[in-house]
Image 1 (cartoon, rainbow, N blue to C red):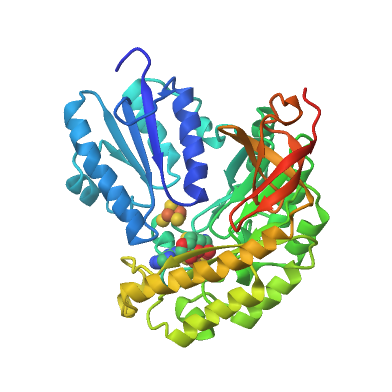
Image 2: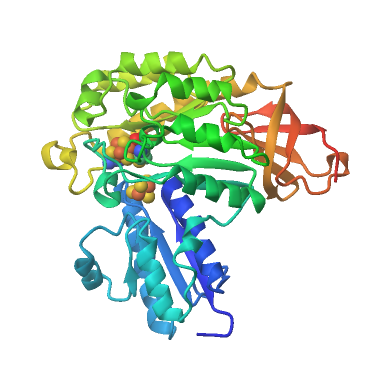
Length: 434
Ligand code: SAH
Ligand code: SF4
Ligand code: F3S
């Protein structure tokens, strides 16, 4: 290894992976590694992978293929793979990818710590460097691991195991540490954060955790995701409305707008139950809502797909993450249902969802033109600052206004001048440079 060893971390997938990569970064920096700009320059390459759809798995496979040559070329380079690509069959993985030095399952940081100790001879204090993310203006904090829902299409429970919640004290400690080091906004993440705490002594709920975290003075904003519609409790909605720091934004994945498809997906709610939950949530003033949709689930007819479009038109989400159904190995749907919606038809349905949603989001966002919004400034892109509203909308505003110093990490007021379906643009209206 060279005098200043470097690492390169490649991350795809959901917020859970992002949260875990923030932890891996912290751990590697604690070990004295510097971050390299490219894999080629790094002594140590970590891939944090996703397999939620075949396309994600293919990106991982391509990356692994590219690294093969690099491994052969560079002596002393180590390659480590984690994330949902790493299932329980480790021997099989080693046989297929002999150029990978080490595999560890998503979130199995203890295994990784033991391995890095062996490699570097450096032992960090237990594996405590993993208990905190690398601080940023906005940080993700995992509050639970795994999922017990087994939606019939989903591979996640097979790769991340059963639900395990992190103790309340541990989460509070981590958020306090992050805030001391400059984090302003924390997003609590898990596959189903609504069932947080059911496995902990005393059964603390997500609302209890939000209440405690709200008391951390320097913390500006709190968010949480993902929410399963069947587990949204009235108390959680009340807590959201009552606590100033908890932002008015929820991701509530519907997946489909058709009862028969929802049943085949094993989601545990009907369209009308879903819409009732939305109605409850909309009592929170200015709340914004996003959702996830799968098109082309096995057997989805044109009429059933139309029901999904109807749900989107009725509900008017602020954002929709749509994906074409992809059969995943081991899942109930892939074993028992034929993937019978042709690829071209899935693409067409996806496009239709996107078209309908773009019009809706454009209309919703244009209503903000002329209004003042609170923006937490996250960073700079060329001559614009960027940040998010409490409702999770991306906002850009020019750097040259008000002779601005360094507003990163500050909450500023921006007057919206332009809006598209994807972002807002405006000018800063009150900011006292420090
Ligand atoms: N726990 C979250 C989401 C986890 S996966 C939830 O329950 O909503 C993120 C999204 O990927 C899901 O919401 C779903 O829309 C999509 N997804 C999961 N499996 C998929 C599959 N086999 N094909 C297509 N999309 C899938
Ligand atoms: Fe997958 Fe369903 Fe669990 Fe979400 S709730 S991770 S979609 S099994
Ligand atoms: Fe992908 Fe695993 Fe997240 S499969 S979406 S990284 S839980």
